[in-house]
Length: 161
Image (cartoon, rainbow, N blue to C red):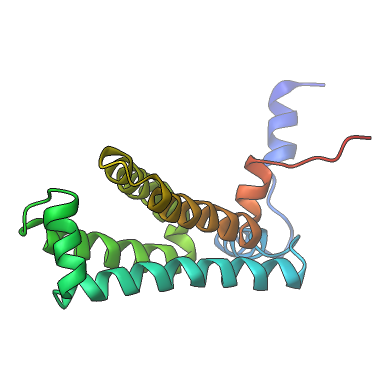
């Protein structure tokens, strides 16, 4: 068979659907088509826990809560001007994490942000509290894994036969 004829056969559009409609259908249904309802609910619940932790952290820092500010300034050695950037980073991560189109980017950025938090805790020998950002990162990726089939295809967990 001729290679050019084969390429034309493969690229032939489906009858009745424009390329834009086909693309819209595949991207909208790819994320949820293969996921059972319990996976979607569990994934969004885990993502909600991550969002709740980030929002509460940003709130306490934005309102200059005494303990939150003292922890950053004296405990970790950050300057007071860093509080604004930390609050902006956490709020941006929350917004990116909630939008399905940017949730993968948010998980990647959140991994870096939380890695820095773990490093800050380890640097001052507060290893018990280093587990908090570690768990939040695991919850973020776990929630994304359960609610997005693209991540499940990228990292498949298979049972042995």
